[in-house]
Image (cartoon, rainbow, N blue to C red; front, side):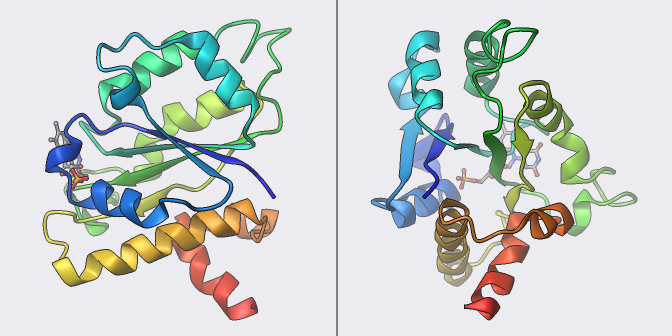
Length: 201
Ligand SMILES: Cc1cc2nc3c(=O)[nH]c(=O)nc-3n(C[C@H](O)[C@H](O)[C@H](O)COP(=O)(O)O)c2cc1C
């Protein structure tokens, strides 16, 4: 069973609809550690030693956050700058994260269609997430397809439970290694794989 670490970042969780719902629904999932970065480091003083120790205890590292300005809330950048040290995470002797998996769990105000070439935002989510993908690569980690909830502003109240259920099932499938390398390579979003694992059960 793989151990999953969720590095969660939402600067205004009290106003959150989507991520508050997602968190509520994954509470207590076996093998999943939730680490709320803004709660632990309200002043952004990220403790690199503590974070590195946490990373070593887990196999799959997920950044969970709302999509802000085509990227992540500030604490994620701070976390990366301080924790992913040369000689530890990357570089000639930096092999601490080798073989682990990394990914993003995000929600966007924009619709799925708006994140296409020719759409309102002009580029795909994968284009915008390139710095994460390359960071994983530099650290000898496998970058997973993202789990994405699009169109949050228009998401109806009754649609949220489905997204929450999909997220929990996705975490369980990752934890239990249900996704083959081929499935992960072909998937645009992790969300797409849920139907495939359910079919094969
Ligand atoms: C500061 C800020 C920046 C945002 N930037 C984007 C963006 O670049 N693209 C986008 O699709 N939505 C953007 N949004 C919308 C958020 O992604 C959306 O409100 C959030 O995912 C909803 O999740 P929540 O209910 O957990 O807060 C932004 C919202 C805020 C407050």
